[in-house]
Length: 249
Image: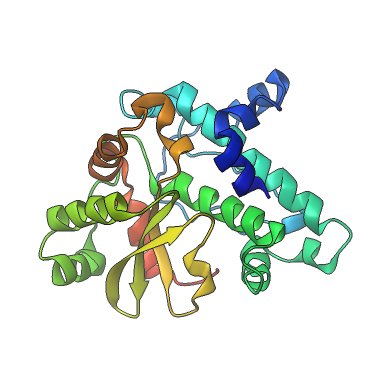
């Protein structure tokens, strides 16, 4: 399985299997239009037509916190998951289903290649919109702000708790800010797991805690990556949108 291969051989070795031409095309995933960082996640593609979505910022826009080299490498890893998902659903009824539906169906067998690849494709698409250039969407607003303050006393305390939760995660995975009804909670998932498996939870934001998300810039210093991502890159404008708009996935 892809996840096992990444752990045994290292994600950088896996990237070497892909040509430089793929690298150039992947870099174009960054959009020229950086005007909107609060858009709804582009995760509603049909599984049989799945592509890495265009980012609402350029890869160099996160420089100083995440380098263009690191972001482009991460996009290439996302592409591995999307390509494999398309391959696995090709010629089946699942090819016509939305990616989130495929993830939920495949979740019945969480160790299957289909779940691992489809979930990682969805998680990554969500992650790209959970971060934004520094200064954009850095705090929640409205009723989401009220719920965050109710759960954590303050936004700063929420940020600190996200970092603590991520630091406690053993191995690879994801940290999620989610809503359960009108309450805000934090959730950690290992490997490819995703809150889509729980119909009572709605993801608002996520942070990728896989090594490939930060190694090129931070080496093994996960805590410094988390401090940068949570305090300067986390896109609360996107969370506001997901909090209010509960349609889809």
